[in-house]
Length: 264
Image (cartoon, rainbow, N blue to C red; front, side):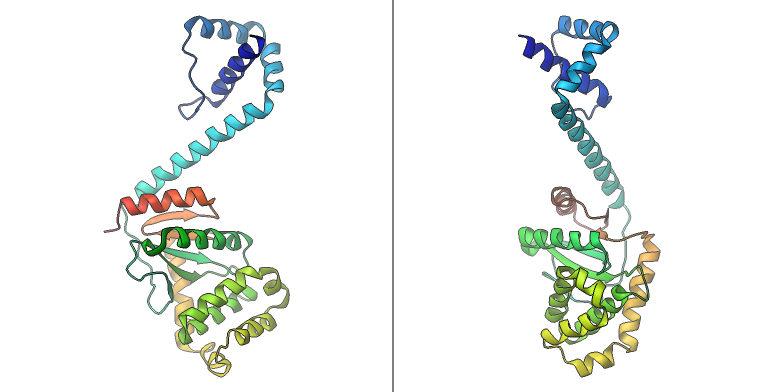
């Protein structure tokens, strides 16, 4: 019986702490118990604190669930607003991973040297596997350091894509799989990776300095500025904005919402 009372009290305290409709703890329907608990809150705060301490893991778990639910609802509200405003970015002359006519297109603004972009690349791989023909990916380069290895990698990715979309995506995977090596070795690692992928190095050298590559990279920067991108990774899921390296389950929520509300 004492365990039951303590558990009920812990649940009530947790619900009170969450202070809002997002709390998922089951409501205490017994009016007498509710009155008794209210009296305890007022007269025995020491007991409340003792119960919280003894049930700290459960309390934290429930609080985290409430926090996650608030975050999810906030993002869903933002995405609903996003869908009202069409967003146009340039994707021509860029390789597409997945069907060109996919119901949902993810446009990723990313930096090959960004740790969170690396995390997000794994999430994108999982999404593409799970959603198959319904989703495609376009990668837009947004290196935060214009003179660093991320900018050099952006040039390589774009130049390689003019030769082969498949080789460009293989290069993309190699960059994120070996981000530390890219940061440490820079240009030497880029050349070594391109050679392993059997890229035409003579053409690559020429394309790296071509007007075409410079135009694509400039367009990516301009599109990011137009959207107000402040950091990477940043995604457009059709017209919905996803900021940062979201956990897989939340990114799936965005895709599911986009699939239910096709872009016009």
